[in-house]
Image 1 (cartoon, helix red, strand yellow):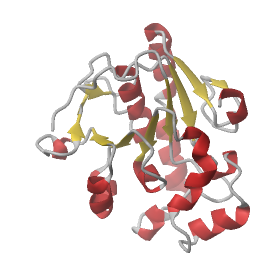
Image 2 (cartoon, rainbow, N blue to C red):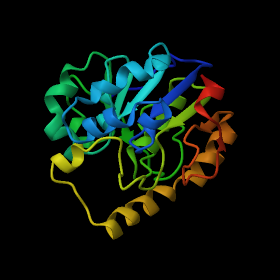
Image 3 (cartoon, one colour):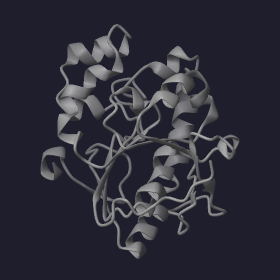
Amino acid sequence: MRWRVPRIWDGSDVWLIGGGATVPYMFGVPEDIIKEVKDRRLPLSSYSPYMKDLWNKRVIGINMAYKIGDWMDIIFFGDVHFFLPNEEGLRRYPGLVVTCHSQFAADNQIKYLTTDERVWGISELNDRVCWNWNSGAAAISVAVHAGAKRILLLGFDMKMVNGWTHWHSEYKLNGVEDTLPHIQAVFDRHKESWPVIAEDAKRMGVEILNVTINSEIDVFKKVKLEEVL
């Protein structure tokens, strides 16, 4: 369904939960639970109680974040290969599910935003996003369209942490386990967009804070989670 993002969060803080491996560590999830989740002996929703400080915030979850809990307002994804094995869960999700993949232009349930002709940055038009070759970066356009005054990035590591690319192992379960050189090449491509996003955000009067202290993204002020909760 073609969609225009309404300004539902005018002047608000908006949190984006990316896929970086540091997410559970930031919220103090015990190591044994993290291991059980990554070994798929516990569900991803095991993280939710530790993230209760976000339950009443404005939150956009990226990709697999929908499995943490139904308290996220929007789930954003850009890759149809992510959607296919997760279709049932995404269609049952009680919040908004939004994508920029053209396959969903006529879908009567999932909100579709087209991709801007500008690959990098933040789109000026509320019916589209700049893709940035990264679902997390693309979702920044959604937050800005919704009226975010300040955007807080969680799990935007842009690197492997303790041998993990994500805070879950669901992609490996789906057969998307890549070699280290390829993984690094993907991260390098993702990092290209951030300077342009930073310039656009400044021009638009939107503050972006990186709550991922050891992130490879160095164009935003980095803050600890406890400083902004």
